[in-house]
Image (cartoon, rainbow, N blue to C red; front, top):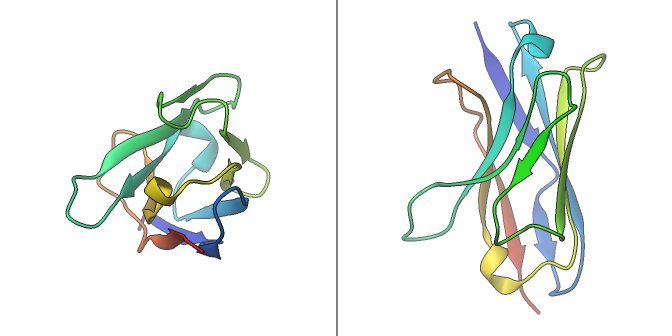
Length: 114
């Protein structure tokens, strides 16, 4: 059974940084493109970042480009989201997803506030 587990969220002040991690279990992790989504209160879930199965190609939403970086370690079945220069409107629950599947983790909450 495909399973994704996110971690690393928390409370951070504006301008701060966080590194999210997502572990994949029960599937061939290195065969899938991976993505990070976020859902803010009262809003729809939105795509934040995408990385190819090999890690050689990435794509970031315009709102986070230049501040966030997505990376992966296929040896450890893990994908990361490094978030720098965080803003209050980055506050959301962050989810990872194996592209093309319906597998979602439980999400990890990020709150950016003083």
